[in-house]
Length: 395
Image 1 (cartoon, rainbow, N blue to C red):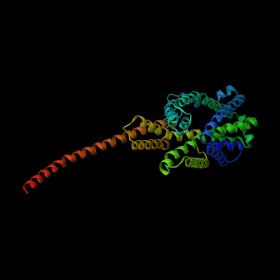
Image 2: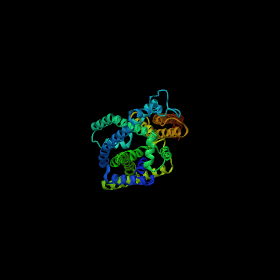
Image 3: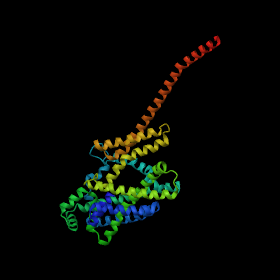
Image 4: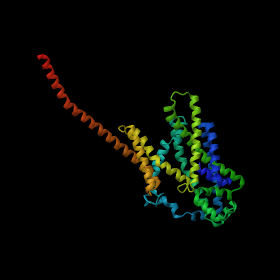
C-alpha cells in the first residue's frame, strides 16, 4: 500500500496520503465484491501487463544509455552476492552469498508451503496434482521474471547516473537536480515512476503505470483475502458463531475483508508519516518483516508433521521465542535480515524441544513422587487394616 502511494503520487503529482487512500479504496471495493475468483483472474491479467511494462521500460532505458553505460554503472556492491567471504553477520555483506542462500532457502520454503496468501492460490487450483504443476511452473517461471525486473532496474539506475538525464528529470518534475536527489534519497521507490514520466510517451506512460499498479494490487488483493480467510475460519467461526449459515458467513467475510483493507490503509499512512519509513526500499521492508515470522511459521508446521512428542503448548512457546529472537537481532545487532529466517526456524524448534523435554521430566518426577508416596502410604494402610481386623475379632 505504501509503495503504491509513493508511485501514484509521483505519477499524478498528488500527496502520498491521497494516493494511498485512492489505491486502498479501489482495492477494497473490487476485492470485497469479487472474492477469490476476481483475485485469480485479475492476477493473471496483471501478470501479462507487468511483463509488457517491464519490457518497455527496460527497452527504453537501454536505448537511452546503451550496453556499455549500463555495464559501467554496475558498481562492486552490485556483485555482493558473489562474495563468498561475507556472511552477513555485520553491517557489511548483508546480501552476500551465504545469507542469500541460507536465509533465502528458509524464506521461500516457508512462503510456498505455509504462507496463507500463497496457499489460498494453491487451494483454488482443484487437485494435488494441479498444485504440483502450478508450483513447478512457478519455480521455472520465477527466475526469468525476477531477472527481467532486476535488469530493468539496473538499466533505469544507469539512466539516473547520467547528469544529462538527471537534468531532464528535474525539468519534467519542475524542480532542480538537488531536489531530485533528495527525493530519491528519502524514497528510492520513486526512481522508476520518475523515469516513466520523464522519458516515455504519454500514451505509454499510462499503460506502464497501470502495469505497476496492477502488480501492487495483485499483492494487495491476495493479502486481503488471506487475512479475511484466517480471521473468518480460525476466529469467527471457531469462537464467535460456530453455527452460522453460509449466507451469514459470506456477509461477515466481506465485512472482515473491508475492515482489514481499512487497517492496511491506516498502516500505510502511519509509515508514510514517518518520512524515511523503509529499510532502503519498500520491498526490503516487506521481506524483512516477513523474515521475522517465516522461520517460526515453518518450524511450527514441521514440528506438527514430524515431532509427535512436541505438544501444542510447546509449539506455541517455540514460535513466540523464535519471533522474539528475531526482534532482538533486528533491534540490537547488524545481522542481515536474511538470517532471521534461519534463526527463527532454529530458535523455535530448539525452544519447543527444550520445553517439551522439561515437561516430560516434570511428568516423570511427578509420577515418581506419586509412586513413592504410594510406597509410604500403602504399608500404613495395610497395617491399619490388620490391626482393625484383629480388634474386630477380639471384640
